Length: 85
Image (cartoon, rainbow, N blue to C red):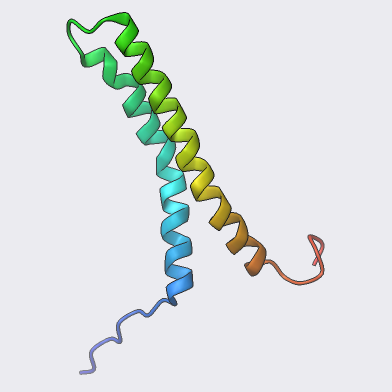
């Protein structure tokens, strides 16, 4: 009986899929981080507001850092001749 060959993915395809996965999980991480101050007891309103703005800025930065390579990879995978093919 033969053993099945391990699945081999190209490095570029693997990275593209992992980056797409990261972009899909980012909103879930954002919701968890936004709801985290609700668990704080005794936290002041000002510190909570600063935390929310810092998380908001960090999410924007991470989304921008993920969007550039994903856009580049999507353009490389697109068929030549534009959108209509």
